[in-house]
Structure formats: structure tokens, C-alpha cells
Length: 249
Image (cartoon, rainbow, N blue to C red; front, side, top):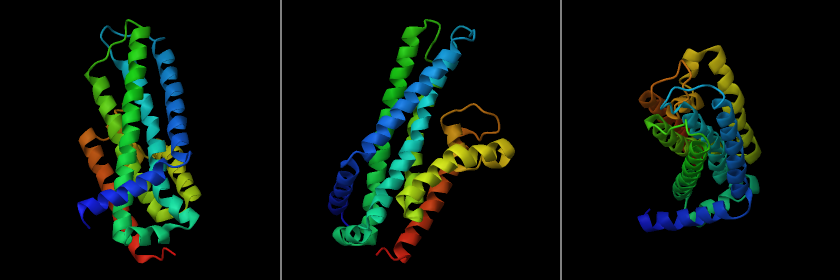
């Protein structure tokens, strides 16, 4: 498959992503959630006396935008499961020239969509931090805030790819969304409370290190990125094997 063919196929997949209101709804819903959470962190943070030059509250305001990763993961899953749920996956495979081409096009579309979520997160977190700084002269933006902002952006990319793999494996839009929400909001946080030494190797808990959550029993950022890469590679390989071997009719 040539680069020009991949670009053409990816453009076709991106047209599907931008068509309709589902993706816009995900973005707007995620932004609203992050704005409210960010404001809550600000209100709680300024009640506590801080040492001069501390960027703790600003960092929390920025970190609130990590919640957009849930929506990035759901978007990644929907890029695949929309075709399965609508019964158009076989038509997509034929139109793109084969399973390999379809798999690659959806991967590129997911990377681009996740990058879009990363941009939204960076802009939203940056603006939230700026508003916080202008609202309280005691707050500062330090290097930790910048590292948190970069970590949040990285999480959008990683979560989108993880969601894509889940979508390929589950093959159902409703079930894949439920699986992602339950894992992110329920199962993995519960495991972290019960067995934190084990939980640090779970995907979304490893993401906590990337966006500098600050909780104990988390891996260093470099190790956490490695754990995320292993999860994505493993699930991606399983997804590719499933797609190439199972019937798509």
C-alpha cells in the first residue's frame, strides 16, 4: 500500500469521524466536565494557604483536563465499532481494498482524532490555568505545570489508541463504550485501592503517572510510558489478529 493510498483511505475515514454529531458531542461533553472539575480544584485549592511560588493549585487546575482521556478512548473505539454496529464493516473493507488497508486507515484516523483531543486538552488546560493565575495573584505557573500539561496531551494520544484496540476486540459500540467507562471509572481505581502495587501496572493507572497525579504507589513517568506502550502493543496485536481471522460479514 502506497503512502498516497493510505492518505486517501485515511481521509475517507476522517470524513466518517467528522460526520454527524457523535464526535462533537464527545468533545463538548468532555470539555464541560473538565471545566467544572478544573473550577472545583481551583475553588478548593485557594482555600488552603500556599507557600510563595507554589504551582500546586495551578497544576491541579491543569491536571483536571486529564479527564478528557476517557472521551478520547471512547472516540477511538467508535471509529471502529460504528462500522460493526451499522453492519458496514465488510463494505468498508471492500471499499478500502482489504483488511490490511482498513486496519491501517482506522489507525491513522484514530491517531489524528486523538491528536485533536490533545489539542483541545492543551488549549483548555492552558486557558484554565491562565484564568486561575489572573484570578489569584498568589498562584504561579511553574515547570511542574508545564510537565503536567505535556503529560495530559500524551494521555489523549495513548487513550485513543487503547480505545481503538478495545473497539476492534469488542466489535460493538455500546459494549465497547461501557467496557471503557467501567474500566476507567470503576474497575482499575478499585484495584488501585485494594492492591496498589499491582494496580500501577494497569493501563489507566499508569496514565496517572504520565499526567503527574501525585498519588503514592505510582510508577515513574518513564516506566509508566513503557507500561502503556506494552498494553497498547499487546491489545493492538490481539485486535489485528482478531480482525484478520474473524468473519467481518
